[in-house]
Image (tube, rainbow, N blue to C red; front, side):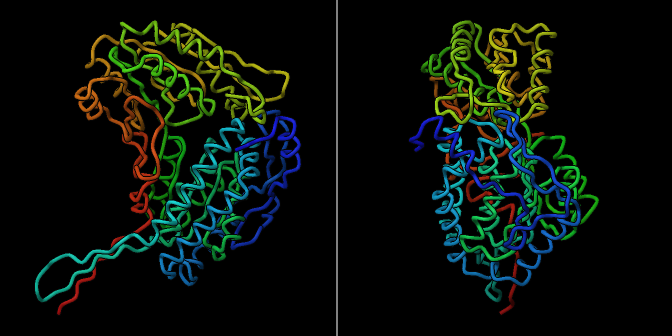
Length: 496
């Protein structure tokens, strides 16, 4: 728990020793000369320079991973020993929790309390969970003919390229890296150019925890160069990506143009949140809807950005959400009292404001926010924004905003609500509020989404899988199912 005030956190943030090199083969590599500035969205300050990897540096990292996998000890260790190393990674993340939380806050703008309590907790628990799982997996010996023995063994897939976004830089990196390492793979991690620093620290900590050289490499750079080089590399066996649907298509093309590597995609979302008039607590439903869209500045693929509410309670629920939006404390993310911080960049703020302008132009009613705020700070801040009377088919209804912008649409019947929820290209998550158990089951089954939350939102733990359908992607993060992405099944048939 952070137990110091704003001024002290500012002092500690300024004193951070931030990384400025790739982490390849267990050591820091400065790169080939090209670099870019890591800019903090809280005030526009340059935090430092990090290397901008091209094909040569990506190849260096992949070669290190290939060597570690083909001839190093990691895939050949007893699973229990791999698990112990992952547990040591979790322990070091816990020891360095404040430093990592401050780094995340500086690089992408989320409130430091959320970075410490939520982001770091998730990363720590992920490494701990997969560390504990590593030696619990079993192979199969199917019953077959009496004169034969059949074995089905699960083997590590090889070199994994992991490309992760900036909105939860450590959580989403951990969701890829921890199960891949537990399976015995070697990894090349490329973080977003907007949040490279915490990933570089993760690479260092993993090496400090005892991960052999080359098993986890971290390269920084822009997607069109570094990401493309990783996607096209013929020695990468598996590519795991979280990000936009548009970029996900690029990785599928890279796989087709190279070695047909498996590509696992966790992509965008435009998640519906359905509130029925029999919701067990309408005030809680409204408060959760507001929390869900404004948490992490709305920069979440699962954000409940479409609030579908029954016409009989629409005004009451919308008024409650608007009141919460107006009361929300937007401020310096290094202030523990801040509830919503800065958007990740000036460019992203501009895109979100473009969606706001489109909503007004399409006739939706702006009920709260809609404007830039805290302009004197040099940071990228937006007021919590609520639209109602959003028409199905409007851009605000269809397109992912990835910001603190809520679109409210009223409906009259349950079939209409389901049709509205399933409309569109995405299928990542959905919410439903009802006191009727039968309705909960029927609607949950009818919703085309990878996760459905009933009378809650964004709940869960490492035991349950996470991922989407339709253009929200394929495969699953979290749970034992995540290991399916990073392992191959081998059948051995022995005639007796």
